[in-house]
Length: 293
Image (cartoon, rainbow, N blue to C red; front, top):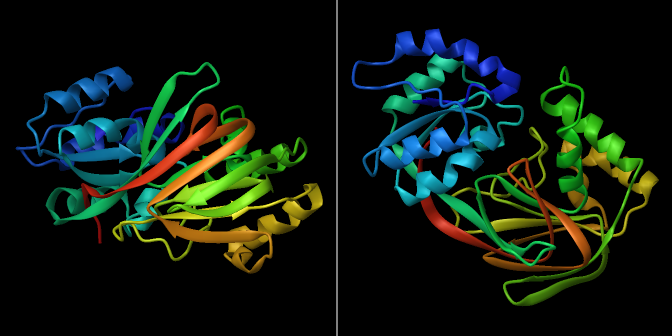
């Protein structure tokens, strides 16, 4: 078991004694100080080990490259602000001890993984894998704002605060979007997000038809919006009725290309990654074995 002591604003660390007492003799609990320690531990484990991760979407995202390279199995004890991966696995409402027992003992199933490749403004080649979402545009700018939000706000309230703050500084980007070799869009866009899970942003039902084991990712594209239009669309996104909006479209895909006329903010699983002008996305079908319901 790997527990991120910084998850949920540091509150995950309080679970250490409870989880330690509940572990069977053949399991070990680690609380790595930082990402370097966590990745080193994952690399030392025998290939194909079962790793129970205590944390949220950001924790899983940072550990994902090593989980994949070592072919580890993943169990999840949800302790994050968003927990959209746990939602997709049917685990987000489970209490920590119940989630632990399930993660240690239940069977695994394959889960798709998303992959994004791009060049940053300095020309450096970048790559990221993700379990829940890769966002580009407004929603990534919102992610950046959540990093500077009030510490007492967590989960969906923190995301809403960041969203409303970003609306006051609204920006759109001219995007060219091609999915599976078919051109979909050229022109202003508020965002172009790619989801593996049905929800993002702490439970927003962005792409309800998304499945984590169908070999596909799901594009959610928002065209031209002003401040008032974006503000009016937000409640629809929260309730899952946004798909009827004439400037919102979705498309399942295996490969996607995004080209922007300006630096486009990007994020994966709620982790801000920087800016890009050309992004190539693809799906890695069944690349990770996960414990779900």
